[in-house]
Structures are given as structure tokens and as C-alpha cells.
Image (cartoon, rainbow, N blue to C red; front, top):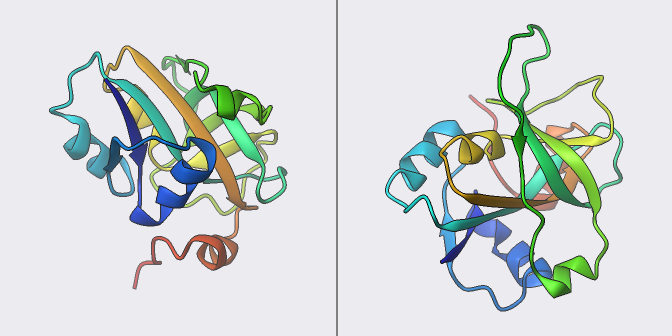
Length: 162
């Protein structure tokens, strides 16, 4: 079975735009704890496609990215951890778009600055991959250039802490 994961309900439009006809959509919520809670009971042979918004230091807003690897974003320390390789998105409509291919770094908070280029930043993908599903693919649409304000203008998504 194939399940499309989105973090917020507002990302349903991305499914309609990039994976038309998909109906098995699960809204997980934003961040690691929501991913763990939402996915803990899914069979590990479920095919997962994560689609959602992501930031980038240098890709133009609106760039469509097919993620090739997922890693945690921890720029201040280095320690050994597995690089999680993702599978290509098996969808003829999506393949025709010829998406940019890149690494996605997952962080526990919104990334506002980074020296990393030619990649995207999110808050869920590494945690999805770590759950042990046999097939994980991801599509990220660049919503901002590491600007929470620009992200809000485009997505009307998560709010800042008060």
C-alpha cells in the first residue's frame, strides 16, 4: 500500500499538483514527535511518499526537489550516523517534471541560516526514514530561503513560539 505523508493540511494542494489522483493521504503534524506518533502503527512494508514544503539557502522559491538522501541537521557537532538513501518517486507525471535532486536535512526547529547549499531543510523526513519503512521517497517544494516570514506568506503554516 502507498501512503502520502504531509505535515499540515494545507499541503494537500501539493499532492493534487504533483501526485494527481493520490487519495491515501496521512496528515502527520509538524516535527519529530508527531512523526513518531503518527507512523508507529503503520506496517513497515507501506510505501511512503513524503511531500511538503522545505527551506533552502540557495534554491529559488518554488523549486521542486526530489530528495535523494535524508540526514539530520546538526551543524555544531559531528558524530557518526547513517545516511538514509531514499527511493526515486515512481510516478510518471512527477518524473516528467524533471525535479532537482538534492539532500534534505531535518532539524527540530525552523532553519534560519546555514552555510549548506544545494540542499533543502525540513522538520520531518529524517524521522520518517528512521522508522524502518522499506520504501521511502520524498518531494519537497522550496517555500523560502531560510525565512520564517516568507514561509508564512506562502504556506500559512506553523506559528512562532510565544
